[in-house]
Length: 176
View 1: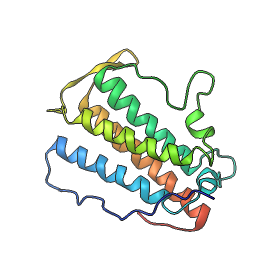
View 2: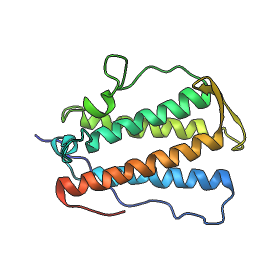
View 3: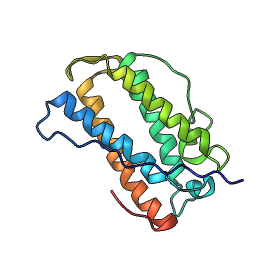
View 4: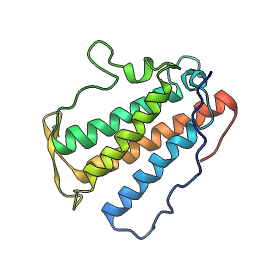
């Protein structure tokens, strides 16, 4: 039997356009996180692994796996100063997030995204200000919560653009 990513209701939050900085950045991040399942809904593992853009190794599953690693790196390793184990990419496979997903790994990879997002939410719950410094460093330099959140919003926005094009190329389904 072929696995298919579940259909999900569009429950993305309404953004408060007068929010203070921390809640506003968190709202954008949540809106983008909630968009990821919409981009993969209804596709089989094989469709999620398809690389429909000539010259590119991008697939929808690869982007989900990459965003899973992004959540872990920024909100566990950098924010908390942890040194967590690699998920998909490592020294022997630096692009493992994008290149090593399979139709068989797709169900667990999608679930792993949800789990990492849930864990990242718990880590962010302890943040009181965008000015707080993360406990970890980025390239040996301190980074504050503001920078991390702005970067995450940028990372999601960029990759959701990729997901829009990939989804359209896989089955013609488009939408914000």
